[in-house]
Structures are given as C-alpha cells and as structure tokens.
Amino acid sequence: MSKENDRLLGHADEADGIDEYDNPLPDWWLGLFWLTIVWGIAYAVHYHFIADRSQEKALAAEMAAAEARWPEQARAELEFAYSVEAAAAGEAVYTQNCAPCHAAGLEGLIGPSFLDEEWIHGGAPTEVIRVIREGVLTKGMVAWDGILSPEQINDVAAYILSKNAEATGRPIDAVLAVPEGGAAGAETGDPAESGDDAESDSAAAPAGERDG
Figure 1 (cartoon, rainbow, N blue to C red):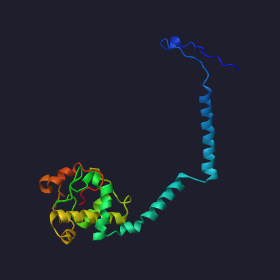
Figure 2: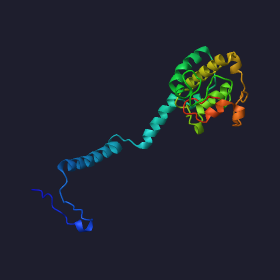
Figure 3: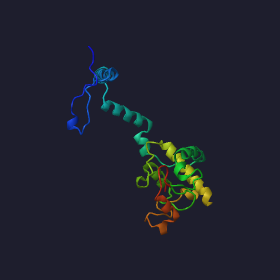
Figure 4: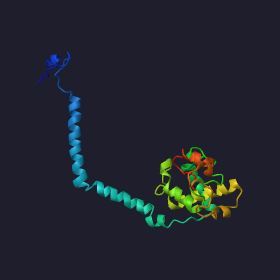
C-alpha cells in the first residue's frame, strides 16, 4: 500500500499560518517503538516471574553484603589503638581520601590543618575517631563510617595524630593522652578562641575535617 506524503491538514488558519503535514511515521521510528514495547514486556516477565527478583530482595542483598563487610558490632566496638604500623598504614588512607581537602602534608586546604595544637572538634583520639566516622555535614565533610572500614578509620586517625606530634614537637604519648575536650579549640565557635583554623573550618569540605 502506497503512503500518501505531504498532505496538508489545513490548520494554517488556526495556527498563525503554520501548516501541518499528515505524513506517516518513518519505518525506523515505528520499528523502535514496537521493539521497546516487546522488550519491556519480556523484561517484566523475566524480572518478576522467571528470575523472581524484586527491589525489596535487591535491597536486602545489598544490606547483607554491607553487614558482612562492615559488621555493626565491629563498628560499635571500635576503639582507638595506636601503633607505628597503624600510623604507617593510615598514610595511604589519608592520601587517598583526606589529602584533597587537608593537603598531602596535612597543612590544610579547604579543610583545616592538622599540624598545630588547635583542634576544632577536640584533639583527643576518641574525638578524632568520632569526627572521621560521623563527619561534619554542616561543613561538607562526609561521614566515613561505612565507607572506610573500622581498621582504616583507626589507621588514618593514628597517622594524623602521629604527624601532629611530629609537627608540634610533642611526644606521641602526650598527644594520645589528651582527654576529650582537653585540647584548645572552637567548641564555642568563637574565632578569637579557636584561632585561625576555625575560620578555615567554615570552608571545610569532604574528607577529614581536622578531626578533632
């Protein structure tokens, strides 16, 4: 059957003089149209009845895999443990995840420096761990719990504290002995009290906001 082309529908007087043709759709377009319909029906039958899949089952599988990789109990029982080996292992974690915001030398970029004795959220090891795990969402730092393993969080905290000890000339034991809330810092949010780092914190971004 021949196709009639270029037949005007005669709507020009209703559309500001714009004419409309009544041409048939191209064969390639119709082929794709019917192909998508057939593919959609086949996919739905396979997804729901043959493979017996569902979004609920996919979510449950992902949750189970995450639970196996980062057990909830292990996260809850994470306690900081410093060692030279942990600090050495933490360097690679820091370089990959924290350096973009805090600089490779830990001197700070859009995130604050780790090389002085001023800590915005506390310089105790437990506080450093907490900031890494929970992040500082208001400043753009993500929570690394669930992204990094408990061991990686411990190692990067050990690395940060070891470099802080080197930069400030304090023994590592003195750095590790800082009690929670014991470090000078900006808990009050007063720049005059917290020093320059509090100002830089306002622009902090993902990766390891000067933990403390």
